[in-house]
Image 1 (spheres, rainbow, N blue to C red):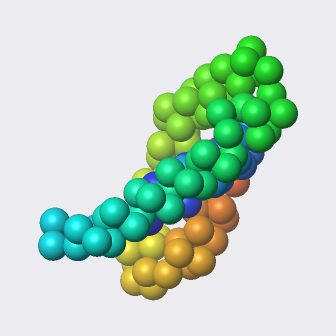
Image 2: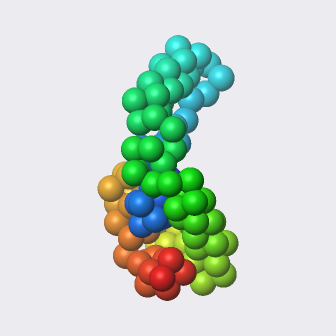
Length: 117
């Protein structure tokens, strides 16, 4: 769940619709759920159109933003901050998306701002 919050935050920060990303869990025994998740996500992406289109970006702008996002999540300080955030999540042992997202936002704000600067 921490990775989910981080990816959504980075996408939002670089101006790419976070709806283009989804992390869901389904076991091998949940075939109908898996089909439903994939169908829903595929429909969502079709409605958004090609990446960059819904965001109003040219191909060059899109590439620059994706490169910036990749550089940010590869940054050592960001990775350390993410490790510290995951430790805080484990310590609190509250597994809601809201709580985890809040910790990710709080613990990573400075390092991400610097990396995306």
